[in-house]
View (cartoon, helix red, strand yellow):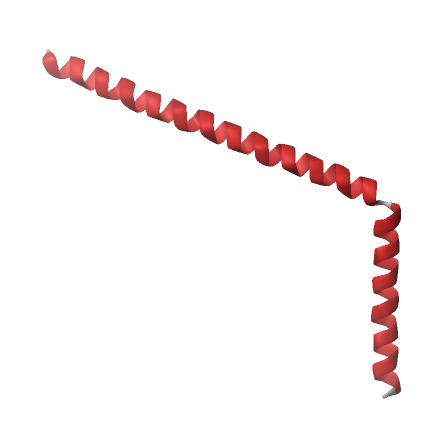
Length: 71
């Protein structure tokens, strides 16, 4: 029973230290979150442009195939 209370005490102490650390360094995690949001936004923009580029190349390929088929 004493070892169980000791384990609960260690877990509670570690949790308190983690919360205290987050309380003093919340700005750091905010910067990380903002950077991650920009990264997701950037990936979505690149995916959109890649999709447009691929669809444009596919249309261009179809046009080129149609031109070569006429010859």
